[in-house]
Length: 113
Image (tube, rainbow, N blue to C red; front, side, top):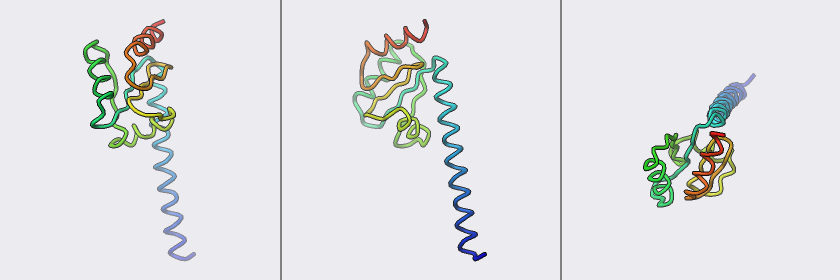
């Protein structure tokens, strides 16, 4: 076999390994989120993201924050949840898009039911 073919196969194996690892991390995170965790996906300099974080902090709601431009896992979660802008939240099995305090409270109540 030529060296180029061997290098190409090696790179494909590495790319596949990275892809599977990211997929497993995302699925693990989403599975954990099904167990009532709050996931918040944001970007820097987003006033609605800041408002959502302030709301969660003011209410004492614990959450896991991902900046989708800086965190590969956050970017993958964002894609898997269908994107559509930020802030994007997953609260148990509910998705909340944008700064929606009433929807956040409703989703939090539903996850406790």
